Amino acid sequence: MGDVNRSLTLEGSEQGFATTRVDALLGWARKYSLFAYPFVTACCGMEFMALTSPRFDLARFGAEAPRFSPRQSDLLWVVGTISQRQGPVLKRIYEQMMEPKWVFAFGTCAATGGFYDNYTTVPGIDKIIPVDVYIPGCPPRPEAVLDGLMLLQDKIQRNERRPGVVKPRFDPVEQVGELVRLRRSASDPRALLPALHQRESATGNAPGEGSEKPL
Image (cartoon, rainbow, N blue to C red; front, side, top):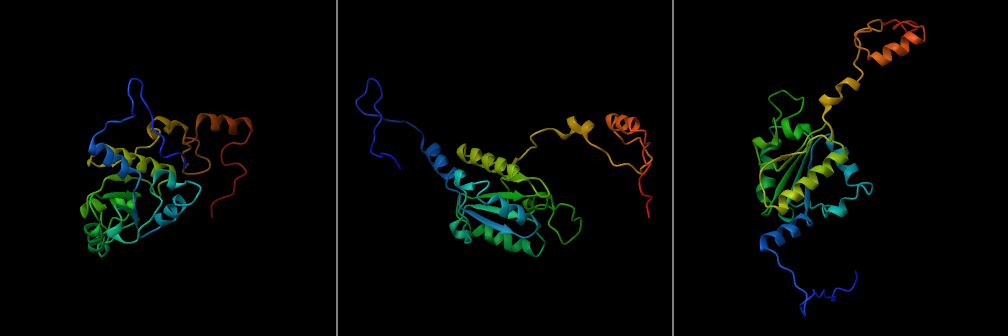
């Protein structure tokens, strides 16, 4: 642990000192002591389990200790789809958590309802409880969740309660030209990239030659 009794003496003074604000000190302490309550309901739970494994090491963020009691936790991880029946349960758990408290919308289903366009699914948990950070993805990659965790820590440090969204690390629109689009048929070269079309032409095989006929 090191010498905790060591003091730092600044030039021109006899004793070391530091100045800060009380709210800044509390924010620094809170951001590194997050007690998580995982509310896992669907397939995003697999990604949450991978996130809490030693490979990604949530302990370095001070958020590795789960608390399955809402009265002992301050960070609610909503992982997965929330149905209308689960809505009152989720709201009760949020109300039982101690203040100050924060909420993660983990995955597209928790953020917007995902592809469940029906009356049984809540179209986003922000219809029930406030959300601090939205983490899109189906499921989101662990790197995206870590970005969301660091975004939340920054919000806690600055005592900011406006919702935040984890943005992609690159703009997909700028790289759409590098994506390979699906063809309607094997003999349709219109959806091929020029480089891929030249490669097929150089081999002497037109698109579709040597391929199996559809059933």
